[in-house]
Image (cartoon, rainbow, N blue to C red):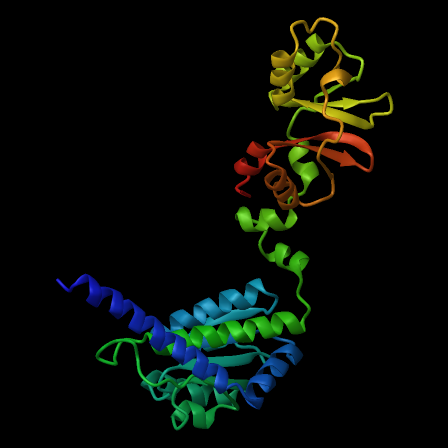
Length: 322
């Protein structure tokens, strides 16, 4: 068993080598990178990303990032390509081939086939003197000093460089397309991420009751309304449904502590007169920010100036937004 010091140093050394590889990739960004971005932006087809071994795994991640940021992409395994998958390539597609050495047998078989189709071929390669680098129309340079593996064998530093350059390419394309949060939400409708981008305050409020009381209502009616709806709060509204205040469980406790008799008290006597609120069309994530900033658990939802409903912190928790 290695010592604690050895284990920590090994981890640090790996991260430093991989960080250095990413910085080296950044230094190698040149005109070819810009030409790759332009070619993808101008093409009417998809981006076909291919590779073999660990490069194939990185290729799949790049495809996933492309697709989620507005660049249509398809993964094609280099080994499967020569057994029928070449049929997925269309005339206007741009092909990116990932390879550490650029000289693997599968790549040497595949590249000439890709060239005959006439598609733009981009080589993301670590060896500039390789077969792939020589045959590619454009080169994305991922050269590196050595793998983090102590035997300089297991793809570690090389795949980190590929992954980082793929991210750089995806983000450049995203920015060139002016791909915004609304666009992002279209591709991420599921899970907490999607909900942060599209779920609105009104969507949460509609799932709750809509407790309200008039300013002149007796305290007994206030207690009944709060207890009945189990939201821990009730909006105080005037005859035009405009919010004039809010009463929470905390207000009820303070009322009981400060008054020997509550028989003559009305809603307007105990309500908070500056309730926190949010417009119904605002995002639910904005409601969360207001709740956190003000250390509250309920938030009134308004449609213009009228009362629409209430959001409780638990609503946000249930949706996985918190």
